[in-house]
Structure formats: structure tokens, C-alpha cells
Image (cartoon, rainbow, N blue to C red; front, side, top):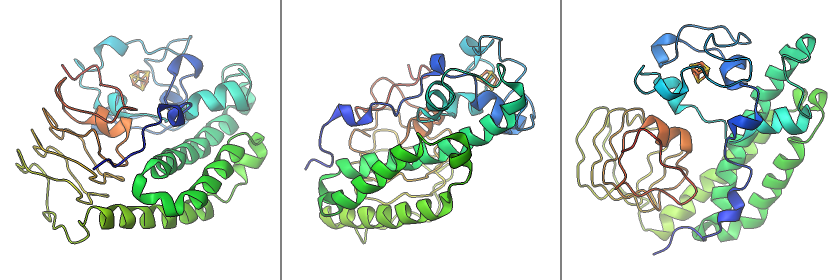
Length: 274
Ligand code: SF4
């Protein structure tokens, strides 16, 4: 049974293109060494490895240097929207007196892109067709907001938009599980570091679960919901994630896998997966 409608075009604009950004994630965000970044850094300070042309000095060594935070981060394309569209190519370096504003706009646009990513996938789910119109309205509202002026973006009531989107996404998950007759599917209380090799995880709702370092080698994830699951060091070697739901590039980048792992068609194989 197919879970998604196939339409690659819907994912346009949802992939990060660092060449069109100005290192916003490496500058705007707070990060810490314990989370797999080079060192503790305050929000708004450029990482010491960020070059003048906004490339990363150690990009080819991120894996070797165990920069898991850097490898795992994905902005869903928010960085290029802020740099190229909202600020029309002007960067925080070009207009330093507006850098604080640019970083705050990036954080809001990132939140909107993250929600849009889930809504786009929701709209592609065959089981969610009864909600398609409401989902589409939320997507269109989202796109409009991401084209507002910086001042308007900073005064958005994002919490209210997030709540409306979450309400729909919950209904989407329910419809999906109903279509797979998996509403009552039991999942282990604790996945941390556990061994689930070869299990059929189809239809399970793993939303917000801590899957850190769990072994899912050769598992099947047909219609499995990954909304907000923590997949750091999760082993997906030889697993079939091709019809996984709400799986993000960041979750994939944070996990372990190989070239035999099957991924949804809109996600890329991390360079660390051999
Ligand atoms: S090490 Fe590279 S990728 Fe990581 S935050 Fe610094 S500049 Fe960005």
C-alpha cells in the first residue's frame, strides 16, 4: 500500500542551499561543544571556522572531527530565503547594524520552514486527503509570511500559527494510522540504545521518541511516523525508510546508515553513509 503520492516538485525550495546563504546557522544560533559543535558559542557570534565567503573551513573534516551537531543541522532552506529574498543578497556582514535583526528573522523563518516541511509532506499523504484543503491553506499562509518584510516577520504570532498547524498534523497522524490499522500498535517505552534489528516498525508512531543509538538495522518503516523523534546515532543500516513519514534531512544526517538504506525520495544520502 502506497503512503505518499509521488510528486517531487512539491519539495522545491525545501532543501538547504548553503551557497546562497551567509552562514546564518553557523552565526545566528547558540551552540555548545557537548552537542557536537566546535566550541561553546553565543547566539549572534560567527563560528570561528566560518570563512569570509561563508563557507566552513573544516567542511571536509566534519565527520573526522566528530562535529555531529554541524553534520546534523538542516535549515530546510530558510537560510537562502532570508539571505536572497528577504534581504535581497545583503548579509549580516554587509549591514552589521542590522545583524541582530537578521538573525532574529532567520530564527522565525526557520521555524516557519520547519512547519511548512511537515505540512507539505502531510499534503502528500494519501490518507490525509480529507484534510488537504486545510493543509494547503496553512502552506499558502506560510509562504506568504516568509515573504513579509523583516519588521512584519518579527511581529508574527508564530505560536498561534504553530498551534493551528500542530492541530492539523495530529489529525493527519490519526488518519494515517487508521488507514494502516495501526492505531493500537504498541511501541517499546524505551528505545535508547535498544536492539530492534529486523523488526517491522510499520505504522508505529515514534513522534518525539528518543531513538538515540537504537539499532534498527534491516527494519521496515512503512508509514512509521518520525515527527520530532531524536535519531542521533540511530542505526538504520539496510533499513527501509522509503515510506517513513515526517522524517527530515536533519534526522537522517544525525543517524547512521549505509547505501543500502532506503530513504524517502526527497531526502539525500548523507556523505557519512557509505
Ligand atoms: S564548524 Fe563549520 S559547519 Fe560547524 S558551525 Fe562552524 S562553520 Fe558551521
